[in-house]
Image (cartoon, rainbow, N blue to C red; front, side):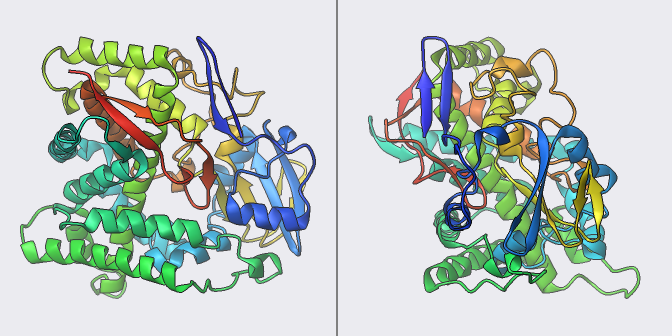
Length: 457
């Protein structure tokens, strides 16, 4: 693991690139431990490649023009998520939007997208502010020097925000902790490699979980069911995602969306809506703590914008440095570092002949650190996002094209607001434990991020 710092620079933790291509055994074991650990130095440049893992062709499309082709212009060919990802997640989110495709995806995508559309952000302001303010009070009540796990705390914060903002409900006591622990156990143990797929089964093998993972999944489902039941029982008439899905009718068959479909979409939005922002905030605390010049500029901006009053949703457009910190955090630590697709038929990407059913990978982890696309790609430099936006298809933390993250505006606004509100009152300091980025589904610090808190005001 490489991590370097100096008076005016910080190179945050990342795996040292391999000097030779991994063997098959190393590839399998490495992928089962972390999906970002096996890449060679030459991979950290934009480009395309093709190789085989057992009987499956793997195509890496990690050049801006190739990314545009796969995720935008030829999306119909490469729409389907890779079977290993679908198999890994189907036990948690069923046929939810994140892993669905075809007519099912086309039917539900507009409903979910509308629920978290940027035009509805003002309606989410109150729950975002109130939940974060309540969370800040809980931090303020901790004894001096108390150690916290930033990953768990940020997940608790964002889980409560998504529940109140989108479902119009409040998590029952202990529910957030159950979700966080359950999803952590699930990520730690789920096998996202799926040996059957690479042996030639185009849909892979159904994943058989051990009892710990089954227990974690059951806990996640109980929490989602509670959120759904509480919302439906409230009969508040509130215009929310759930109310829209409940009232939705299939134009052809004139029937309501089934209970299982309702559960799948609620689970997808709940998990995707809190996990990605939580990991982004966790990495932001780590980066700021190790770049005092960037942290000082953040505090200066917050104090200048808000003065003595609490910062709020209306201030978000003025927080350009705070937003740059979040952008740079997602460049270095994209929440979903690998997008996998399955080719529905033979095609061509650049000069690579793509077989039908090949796995096609777009890899933000490598793209965002490509030395031919970024200056000093491994350094934390938020200022790179102030003057100009990155070149098209070189920065894709929310993906691009028809399958771009429906909640991108929601997540970005939430991350900026939470970071600013908490940084206004606290300085977050990692305890010095080794920081190791690891990816099985999302990109987290292995074992969490132990931190202590210092009051600013």
